[in-house]
Length: 382
Ligand SMILES: Cc1ncc(COP(=O)(O)O)c(C=O)c1O
Image (cartoon, rainbow, N blue to C red; front, side, top):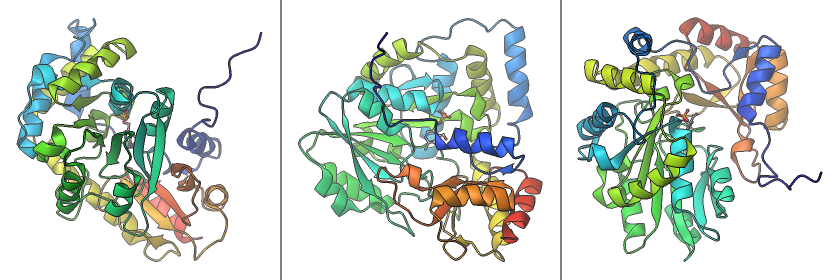
């Protein structure tokens, strides 16, 4: 039989899965994929078992457990001052990944253009492509990886349906400023362009900066799908529970896709997160200090290495400039580093549409102090 040609011909196994497989094979320290090597809060973990034993094992409502939608709405108000209707403007999803796919599928038509910033998280483009849209890529330039609003303006056409933002930004750690939000408001004045704001690292931001959620701006919020991930906030990435908030009209369309993509998200996980959010509202406020200590420990230990340490104001990722060590391509360098230092990292070029070489690799510092110290010691030998 002749199988149909691929709908995503240029997509292969993600670089994250590849590097994790190599790290496991070579028993290296895995600083490649973005997940913690420690557990989430014990009361949260225990609550899942309890809810399963109590029989919370059947389908959750399509939009999410009401108590979790309400907890999200309360949190958004507490953190960003936006009032959301829990019933009509919040949907619980199977990770931020599902929310991203549903938001794009609900609104992007064949022939539409969607603007993304490179280096970009890898799930945006395939979702646009599968819906018949075209992704337009704008570079973020080192060392700050800030948005160039002139370039953004130049990239907007009559076909622009959506712009995708991600702050704090994976893989560079850069964060948007309040000035960026103002510039964006001015740029979009009088247009019908939609926004997808990927804010999965909303609570992982350092040096006393404040996360500039699109929830803070009524003008941006009225055209935005804003997505986040409980996996990142509660150190439980494997649970794959996230959420999307959007104005009712957009959320109505979003739910039409969500309804047939997954229908609903794991009930005991949702119940546990809702309970935990009510019992420990401080958790997210403590994350900046928690992760900043890890970033600072790693960077302090790496200060005697030959790597250049790039600014990392947010996320649990750190970029390292290796140009003083090697002129290999970043894909070759991560393999060399794995062999020589026994540490797995991620090359930056797969995050660029055109494979731009920056001479940098990304590491994840969401690891125990022991792991970070050991990894830094091995990297300093290079
Ligand atoms: C920028 C960004 N968006 C979305 C996701 C996906 O989040 P989730 O695991 O909740 O699907 C990730 C996970 O690494 C991410 O880094």
